[in-house]
Length: 124
Length: 109
Image (tube, rainbow over all chains, first blue to last red; front, side, top):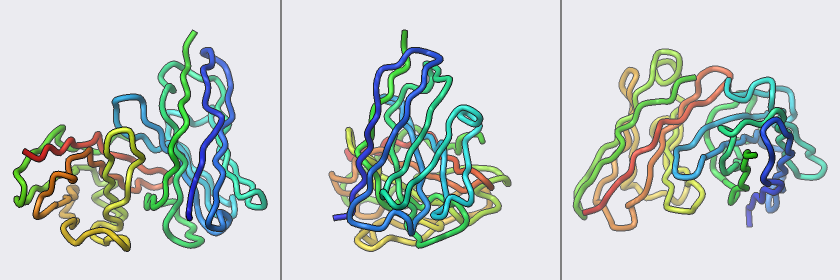
C-alpha cells in the first residue's frame, strides 16, 4: 500500500524551531517530486514547499521563504521540513504529498498521495 | 502568490449538477494548464479529483469533470450524491510556486 506518514509536529514557542519528517512506504520516494501543504484548523489549504526527485530544485511560498527548508533522503525514503523562526500564523496541520508523475522537473501541483498530517502549534 | 478565488459555498440536490469556479490571474491559471482539484471530507486528507485542467486520475468517477477558460477554471460534478458533500479546492502552478483556492463547501440538500 502506498503511504505517507508525517511526524514531528509539536507545541513550540514563537521564534522556535521544529523539524517535520515524512516516511514513505509502498513506493520509491526517490522517483517523485514531493511537496508540503499546510492547513490551519478550520481553514483552507496552503502550498508551502516542494522539491524535485533529485533535490535539484526547491520552491517555497513567500510566507515561509527564508525560514523553512525542504530536504529529502531518498536512501531513507524520507522527506523533511526544517522550520525556523516559527510564528503563531504557522500553526496548522502539515501534510506531505507526492507528485503523481515520475521524475518531473517542474514542480506542478498534482498531489495524488497525502499523509494524514501532523499538527504544529506555535504559541507561548 | 495570492490565493485563487472560489465561492465559499455551493449547494445542489441529489441527481443535479453543480459547477465550482476558480478564478486566478495571468500569473497562474491564465498561463498554465496545470490546474488540479481536490476533495476533502471533514478530518480527512484531501483527495485528487482532476489534474492538468481536465484529466481524471485512475479510479475517479466520470461524474467529476474539469475545464478552463481564460483565467477561470471550473469543476463540474454531475449526478450529485450525498457522499459528494465536502470541501473542494482548486490549485494552480504559478511559476516556482503553487497556489490553492480558498475552498468551496458543497452541500447536498
